[in-house]
Image 1: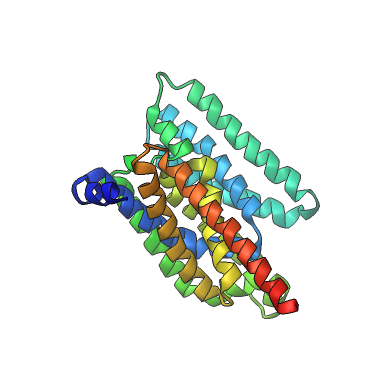
Image 2: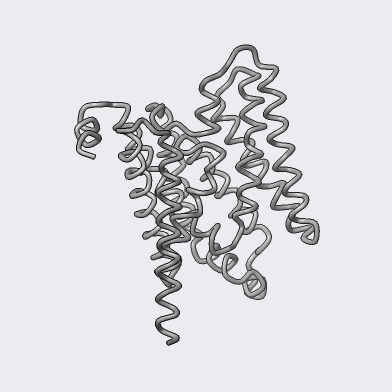
Length: 276
């Protein structure tokens, strides 16, 4: 641990990684709360994996993979959202199909791109140690947009998250707000790609919020606790992976998963203790 602290004070790449973890924690804390409470983790997973198609096309065209991810994420969110609203009885099958087709398109475009692109592997599996100043700027802009947007539409998003039918009765455009929520979740997926990669992005999006939801009662507190936990997980994962030279993204998720399991055990014991 002390070795990591010393390196953090002198190594710019670690400082960038640390900053990326903090920025990612804001997004996953705020939007992860909506995803967990609304129970749309599967939809968010479909969005995340469909993003590979946009990244593969971007690589094939020679443009930024992160830009391709951004466009693909928003497009996938709208497609999946509309599908889930119009065909709820086939929702799981259709989302699974979009998930698979997006991944398949990505593989096809990547196979047609000359050479081996090591940067793509960092997007798939995450490499927080390769974060650049440009990545940090994009993450900061996305964070700012998410925070401002959620702040402006908090009550509306809260209503559609907890009770969609009640929000309709109040005259709110529930379907439009639902699609808007999915688009915001898609932007958060792009925010987290550099930290843990497409494969593990849903875990970081949901685990901090899931732990926070076990111990807090309000949506606002849940967001705050989830953001703090996200910062603890990303920083702790970085520190734990530094000495043994382990994959940072995977270590972050293992730490988050371990805390979630321990929290669940303590929560269940607490509930049993109250009943007895």
